[in-house]
Image 1 (spheres, rainbow, N blue to C red):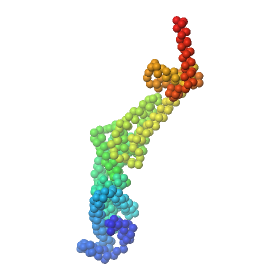
Image 2 (image 1 turned 45 degrees about the horizontal axis):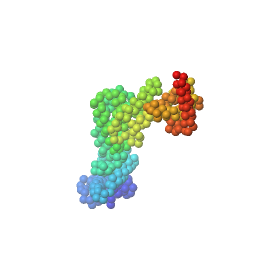
Image 3 (image 1 turned 90 degrees about the horizontal axis):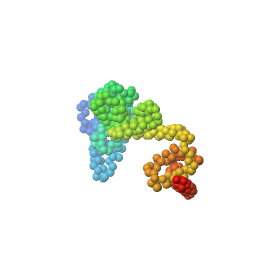
Image 4 (image 1 turned 180 degrees about the vertical axis):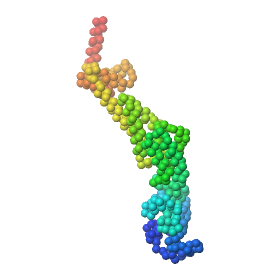
Length: 416
C-alpha cells in the first residue's frame, strides 16, 4: 500500500485517533507482531499504548515515504518525466493536513509546544506527532528536491523555527537601531513590523519566497546601518525601493513626500522639474531583491514611476491650459492669407534653402506671432498637416500672390 495512504486513513477512516477503538491487548499484540520490545510499555495504560502505536506507525511510514521518493527521483530521471509536479503535489497534500491539525486539533499554544509530549500521551500528543511527521516529510522534500518545490507554498514548521532562531537577535538589534534614527514613525513601524514578526515568531503564511525575502531584508539593512549608522531619509527610501518593499503605507508615504516638495514649488515648470528629478532617482535605483514584500502587489518602483508619470501628464496639460489662457489675440499680427497658404510659403522657404533648422520651431514661431482672418489661433498641428498636404487651390493662390509681389518688385526697381 502507498505509505501516504496512511494519512488518508488517519484523517478520514479507521486510523483517526479520536475514533480508534483498539483495546489494550490489541495494541500489545501489534507491538509483539512487529518484534517490538514490550518490557518498557507493559506498564502503560491504554491511552499511552495508543500513543506508542501511532509513534511506531508513523516512524515506519516516514521511512517508507523517504525511501519511496528517493526511488521515484531516479525513475523519473530515467523516464524524463517531470518530478517537480510530483513534489509539488506532495507539498500541497502535506500542508493541507498540517492545516487541518492546526485548525481543528491543536491550540496555538499546543502548536508552539509541538515538540513537548505529556506523560499522559493524550490524543493531543498523538496529533502533535502526526503533525511532526508531516512536517518532517516537508523538510525532506526541501532538502532533497529543493529545485522542484513550489516557492509560493508555506515552509515546514521546523524550518520556520530555525529561521527565527537564526535571525531573532539581529532582528531585535535592528529594531533598536531604527528606533534611534530620525525617521518618520510611519517608516519606522513599517520597517520594524517584519523584524518584530521574526523576533516573536509570528510569521503566518511564511513561504519559501517570504524566507528568502526576509533574509535579504535583514542582510541589506544590517549592512546599511553598519556602514552608515545614521542614514538620511532619502537613503532609506532608496533601500526600500531596491528591496521592493511594496506596502501601501510606504507607497503613500513616499508619494506624500514628493507632493510636499512639489507643493513648495511656485510655477508649474518648477513642479515638473521636481517630478523629473524624482523619476531620475527612482529609475537609477536598482532593484536587488529577488522577491517582493507583498507578492500579490506590483513592485514599489513600478508603482512610483507610474504615479509620477501620471502627475507629469496632469501638469503638462495644466501648463498648456495656462499658456492658452494667457494668450492675447491682440498681440498677434494679422496676415491676410489662409493657414494652408502660410504652410505653403513655409515649405518654399525650406525647399529653396532660405530657412534651415527644425520645422517645429518655425511652426511654433508662426503660431505664436500671426493670426489669419479665419483663424485667430493658428495651431502648430494645422501648419504641419498643410505643410505635407498641399492643395491645388493653395498653389494657385500663392502663385498669384508671388506674381503680385514680383510686379511690385519691378516697380520698386523702376523707381530706384
